[in-house]
Length: 401
Image (cartoon, rainbow, N blue to C red; front, side, top):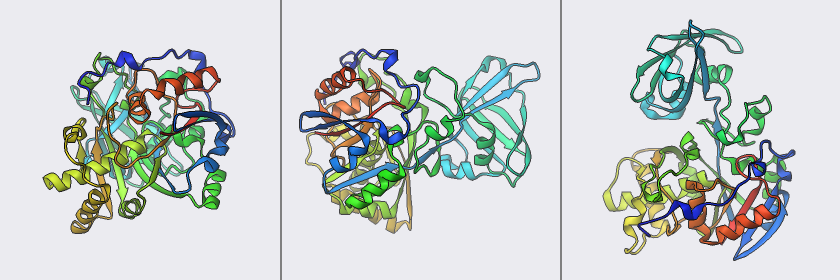
C-alpha cells in the first residue's frame, strides 16, 4: 500500500446545484450509471435487475434510521440538541439499548453545549398510548456521554425516540427535515433500528425491484451495519492514512454467513456500508485463524499488514467464523469495524457495488477508487456531464470492474 495517499488527488468540482435535495419519485426512476470492464452506460434504475450477472448475490444493509436529533429546552429558554451517536450502556449493543425501558447512556454530539451546565433537562413526551417524562443528564462532559431516563417502563427507548426525535438528514442537504423525509430517507427493507444515517444506495429499491430480483433468480441476503455520523466526516489531513476512521457496529445472522459461504463469485453489496461489513467479516475470519481472536473488531489498517503474504481463502475464513459461532452457540455475530478501504486494497469478498455518488475528498470516494482504480475520474466526469444527481438523495451506479 502506498504510504502517502494525498487526499487532494481525490477531489473534483461538485456544484451545489448537482446535490440532490430531494429524491426522485417514484424512487426506482432514478438514473443508473453502469460501469463494467471499463465501459460506461447510462440507464434507469429499473434496468438494474436485467443488468446484473446471472450469479449475482446482492447483500443489503437492513439498518433503520432513528430520529436521532433530540431537542431539550432549558428553563432559561436555551435549546440544547442531543444527537445520538452510539450507546455506551447495554454493552454498547444498539439493539439492546433501543429495547431498554428505563434508562440508557449514549455518546452524543451536543449542540449549545456551553449553555448546558449539567442540570437535568426534562421534556414530556406523548407516545401512542402513554405520556412519559423524558430526562437528559450530562454525565461525562469530556466524552459527551448523556444518560437518558424516563418514568414509564411500558415505553421503550425506540418508542421515545420515534415520538420525540427528528430525522438526521446529511448536513450537505442544507435544509430542515420535512415530514416526507421520514419515509424517503429510509429503505423499504429497513428493519433494525440504530443508524443515524441511511444506507443510501438502498433508497432506490422498491417492492417491484425485489419482485424482479425473484423472477430473475437473483439471490439476496441481509446484514446490519448501524451507520454512524462519521460517514460524513470529511478527510481534513493531507495524507488520508492519518484520517481518524469512524467505528461502526455490525450484526450478521449465522444463516447469512452460511449462505455467503455458498456464493463465491459475484457478491455485490448494496452500498458502501454493506461492502465495509462484508470485507470486515472476512478479516475477522483471518483474525480467528491467525490470532484466535475472541472479540470481533477490525482495526483501521489491519488488512494491509498481510500484503506480502499468501491470502487466506474466503471459504476458509468463513468456515473459521462458522466454527466460532457453533462453538460459542451464537445465532448472531456482533462486531465493530473501523476498516479503512483505500486505493491499493485487495477485495476478498466483494466483486462490485451498487452505490450513489460520493463527496469529493471523502473516505467513501477513496473506497470507490480502491474498487475501480483511476476509472473513478471517468465515472464521475461522465456523471457530471450527463446530469446525474449526487449524494444521498441522488442517482445510483452499478460498478463492476
